[in-house]
Amino acid sequence: MELRSPCGAAIGQLAYYYNGEIYTCDEGRMLAEMGDKKFFLGNVLDSNYKDLLEKDLTKEVCKASCLESTECCKKCAYMPFCGTCPVTNYAHTKKMQLLNQNDYRCKIMKGVLDTLFSYLERKEKSTIKVFNTWIN
Image 1 (cartoon, helix red, strand yellow):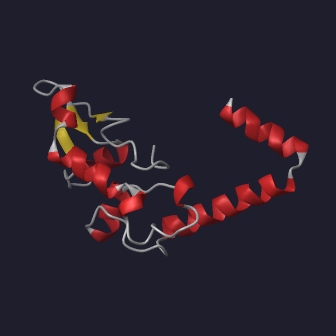
Image 2 (cartoon, rainbow, N blue to C red; image 1 turned 60 degrees about the vertical axis):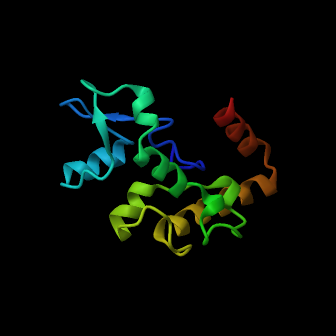
Image 3 (tube, helix red, strand yellow; image 1 turned 120 degrees about the horizontal axis):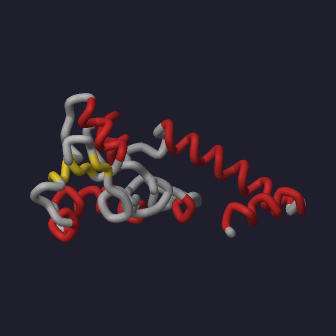
């Protein structure tokens, strides 16, 4: 869910804790486990899905993960194939938005995408067959 824009937090996934607490995603739940409940949305006893979708936090996470509005991603050739995780960004910088295109996750994704594109460019039948199994 992280590799889409916006990411899936709160709109494509939720994480439920044993005590009924609801978080935007599993990364948000794990951050709460470390003492920071920034990504807490509600509790199963008194929240419904409509309420969760209307939360300011849900909107903030969606906005922060839209690469088209992220300054360092706007001109990146990889943007259509990438995504960002507001929870990870927050854990590292205390900001949900990606602030630096040289972020370690950006470097990893660029390397992964370079590798995938180089395989696609070679057009080897055995590799294309594997890729097609991924999308079917």
